[in-house]
Image (tube, rainbow, N blue to C red; front, side, top):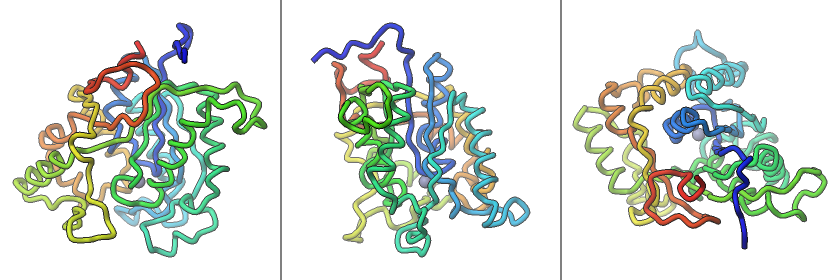
Length: 293
Ligand SMILES: [Zn+2]
């Protein structure tokens, strides 16, 4: 199998996220860092975040929240140097078991082949070598995050297959590496301790996955984390990008309670599980483009 990267192909990363603000939380550091390194950064956001918070009633109403959040997202993209933002146009499905799950446009219940096709078309157009999304549990079980994982993993497999979605009339493109955002369980525990030391309650409360048989434990087993990217120099930009999502940053949100030095300490690294690689690159690695440049 020869999969030489053509010299003329610009290094490109595509991050696939469910809601506005997810890009900043999980991948804000790598988006900023790679943009600065001259990598083309593509963000795909699947829903409008219609079911999100409204930090202050003066900011938005449930009816215009998606419009406001799109503006916030565009500002975050500017801060992070995202080259292209693509919106898939689905509706936020809300947390599991809520009536928003049943909305006809809810992302989580959308036709998988159709949604995958949308992403395959974007992969074929932008030709990313690296694709990043959540793990199969969407990190914390949110149905839209799980759906984003499904379509990204399928697009990784299908984009290079000429028999998949031939009606698109786009040249097939085979991405080289697939990553899931991954926080090691040991790091989750440290994270909780550092927050507790500052009197801040951890964001996922007491449901850290223990004691509830239906919820897999949060975080990734340490041995599955393959890739640790230093984003220390970019952590302030990541913080600003996150804060651009002002409707989501009410005073009770744990991010809002974190003093900037603690934020820098806890978010100065972004960590990933390399799920597939079609290039030779030994793990552990410190760069999502290892083996590609
Ligand atoms: Zn989300």
